Length: 214
Image (cartoon, rainbow, N blue to C red; front, side, top):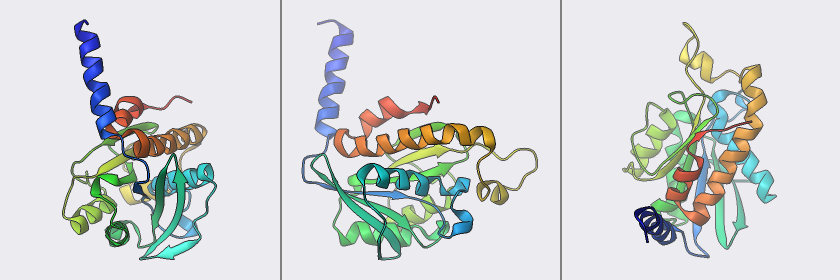
C-alpha cells in the first residue's frame, strides 16, 4: 500500500465513523425572514434551500411550533426535521434551540443553512464550527445554544456593489445573472444537507465546498 492509498483508507475510516446511525433524528434549519416581502431576498437563502429540501422529500411546512414552521420526513433511515424560524433573522436562536432541546436532538445533528456575504455568489462552504461571521441569525443561535460547535452550510451571496447599504443588498432579490445559477445552487445545497445526515460533515466538506457550476 503506497502513501496515497494509506491516507485514503484513513479518510474512509474517519468518514465511516462520522456517518450517523440509522433511526437518528436531525434538525436542519434554514435562516430567513418571514413575510412575502422577503421571500425572494438574498437574506432568505436558507429558507429557499429548505423549500427545495421539502420538495425533494415531498413534505410541506404545515406545522407551527415553538416560533418556527416545521416539516418532518424520513430519509435513508433517518428522521429529519426541517425548520424555518418565524422570529425574524436576528432572533433565529429563539426558534432553533428550543426545538433542538425539545426533541432531544444531539448538537452534532444540527445543520444551519444561511446566506454569507463573505463568499461569492454560487459558493458553498460547510464548516463544523466557528464564529457567526457577522451573520445575526447565526449569532442568535450561538448565544442561545451557548456553543459554536455545530455544523453550518454557508451559501455565498457576495458583497454589495459600490456604496450600497448592506441592509438594502441582503433584503433585495438576486440579480438577473445570479438568478440563472440559483436553481443549481439550491439543488446542490439541498443535496449537501441530505448527505450531511447520512455521510457526515467531512464528506460534505470534501464534496460540496466550492463554487457551483451551472
